[in-house]
Structures are given as C-alpha cells and as structure tokens.
Amino acid sequence: MQDLTTKENVNRLPILVSGNGTVQLLNVPKLPNGTGSEMAKAVVGALKDWDLTERIGGMSFDTTSSNTGRNNGACVLIEQQLKKDLLYFACRHHVLELPAEAFKTVMGPMSGPNVTMFKRFQDHWQFIDRSQFESAAPRHDLQLLKDLTTYMDNVNWDVGKAALTKLQGHLWYLSRSLSLWQSLTPGHGGGEEANLTSLHTTVGDESPAKRPKLRLEDGFLDADPATWLEREDFRTAAAFVQGIAVINDHAERGVALIQEYNRKLTQDEEQLQFLLQVVSRHRAEFPDSRKKTVAAGVAA
Image (tube, rainbow, N blue to C red):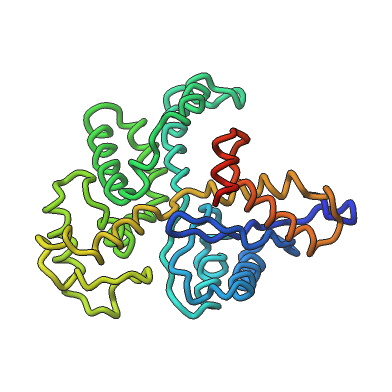
C-alpha cells in the first residue's frame, strides 16, 4: 500500500495476539520488505514493546514460504529470537483449496474468477458453525486423509489424488505437539473416554519438560483419565485449547483496518498506530450500532 507521506508503496504487517477470548492489535508496522527476517524482527519488537515475550506459546500464520521457510521463514526466526519453541497454528483456510483442486481436475482450468459452485459456498459460509471444526483440527485432518485415500481407491483416482496431494502439503495439525494438546477438547468423536485415555497414555508418561507448553496447568496428566472431567485444571486447559485461533481472520481484519485508515486523518506514523489501536478497541466494544450493543458497551 502507499506510504503515509510519499507515493512509494510499502509493506505493512498486522501483528495481533489472542487468547482466552481476547484479541489485541499490537501494531501494523511498515516493513522495508516482505522477507521472513523483516517480519520476524517486527513481530519480536512488538512483543517486547508490549512485554509479552514470556507469554507467547504459539503462532497463527498464513502458509506462505516467507512465513514457513525452514531456514529463513518468519516463524523459525521468531523462535530463534525468542529463544524458545512455539506451537504452529497454520491457518485452516487452506482446507478450502481442496475442493478447488478436485474441481480443476474434473472440469479443467477455470476461465474466470467467478465459479458458481464456489460462489454458493461463499454465500452460505456465514451459516456454517466453524467452531465445530477448529479445536478438533488434528482429528479432522487424519479422517480426511483416510477418506481421500478410500475415495481415490474406490471412486475416482484422479480427483482423490489431486485433493490428497494438496492436503499432504498442509499436515501442520498432525504434528505430535498439536495433536496432543488439541485432543484436550472432549466430545469430538472417537468416544470421550477413549480420547482421554489415549492422551494420558501418550503424554502422561513423558517428563514435564517434554510436554507441549501453553502456560497451562497439566497436573491432570499424572492422574487417572476417569477423573479428568471432574478436575478444574483439565476443564481450564480444555476451554483454553478450544478457543485457540486456527484461522487468520484476526490478521485479515488488521489488513482491512490499515487499508481503511492509511493516509486518513494523520500522516504521522506514531499517531497512525494510536489511531488503529483506538478504532480496533472501539469496534471490539461496539461491533454494531444497535441500542442494546451501545448500552452494554457503555455500561461495561
């Protein structure tokens, strides 16, 4: 987008933190370029400014090479600069690429950006309860792998193979650490008791130093799984994990915010950041202009 005071185009990166139902915009800094090194530098700088470096347990990000590169991606560089391992919450929007791959295999190249089937899906997206799928991402991905393999073998090899190949490039949530912690959310298939027993068998025998860390009390891992649902530490951990953001909607709203207010009201970089903070906070407190919403926001 255009710089505040010149006609040059610049890169900007929305940096937000979330947890326990709260989302906070830190800033939307201007970057010299879009490399992983510059993004990591900006993210770590923002975390230090807000004194949050010790409170970060994971990262949510788009699966672009500048973010995920093994040597120079922003994610690995952030870990290096913070001197600790973080959990990777890759944006789940990649799942929407799968029907596109299958569609192209069946129908051939698309002649334009507007495909009727995808437009219908987009129109109905708001009615889909996405919370049912986010916290159980590992289980859904594993089941999808199995289903695509079966479809490829028994229905249509080409379509199944196209979707399976695309999915195999996005198996972030089948990593050991994520599948373990997100299995804390009960009630997502496989039998609740069986899920808890499996988690206890896999993680409970590990030393505390090797267990995935999200700043959660995990004493329940040393207890009988039959008692977990009665334990406060388990219920707290399960509620926290269920609320983890696994899509980058927050960042997309940050992009929309800077696009809306860039070169508006101020041409001072510091004041722009303050403006974004104020607008972001106001929109969180007053998401619409209904009388009920305004009254509740004022009372709070």
